[in-house]
Image (tube, rainbow, N blue to C red; front, side, top):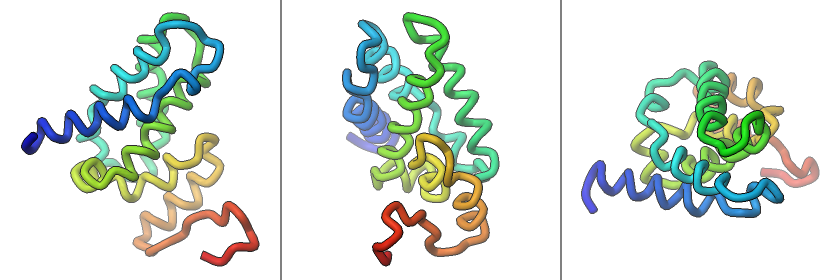
Amino acid sequence: MEGQNHLCEMQRYVANVAITPSTFRKLGAGFVEAAQEFLASLNLKQLANLEPSEYPKWLEDQTQALLASFPLAERWGPARKSINIFMVMASLNQFLCDEYKLGPLWLCARSATGQYCHKEVACVGKGEKSCAPRAVPDIQY
């Protein structure tokens, strides 16, 4: 695999590994396949120049687009969950992270609830080296 083909294959691999039947417990057939296909073809190039403060809007736009491909309408939670899981895994993949400059976005992507997003994106945007949340307060990072 070379260049863009390698990135496409890597993105498909991440989508397939990230989204499994356990992601959509009890929702029935079609959700896993729809999410995997959507995420494998997601245009990550637009993230390369995206300001971290614009990520929430991008995330909502993609959530709505994924919703449209689901077999049942109005499943916003599973759609957002899928994109969050995929974005965390994509940001941890060195090939995708480097090519699409996902580093500044991983802090926002890693939180399925978005609870850390504003604070962390703000400090990463200022060029600070690390402002990762303390998931376990007693552990020093």
